[in-house]
Length: 124
Image (tube, rainbow, N blue to C red; front, side):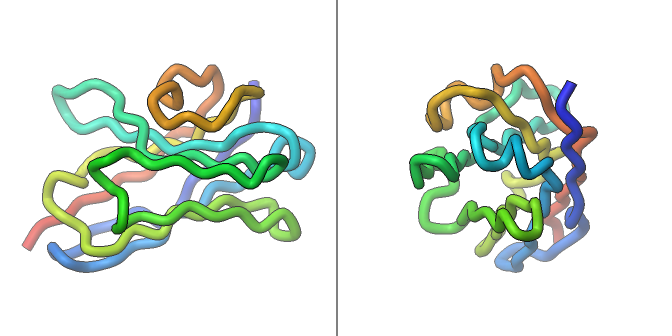
């Protein structure tokens, strides 16, 4: 089981921003695709974004394109999810996940390893 640790969630007003962080072992970050998926109460998992440091590929769900940005910092063993223009529909528990697979956001929820998650609540 890969050790992934998320942080950065919280309560934010609509239109606000948050940056989530995922701590990833360097050996994993360099070779695996790292992704984020979210799950709201009563709903299924939704892939949000993914990044492959080895290929330089990123992919985003249509629902977050233009608002969210995923990046990695190998020196800090961290993957970031910058979330701007947040909406109430973005409220969910966000999980960081990894797999030795191509970066395609639709398959991110099926990755085999993920962290405990961080709660994001968008509300006025």
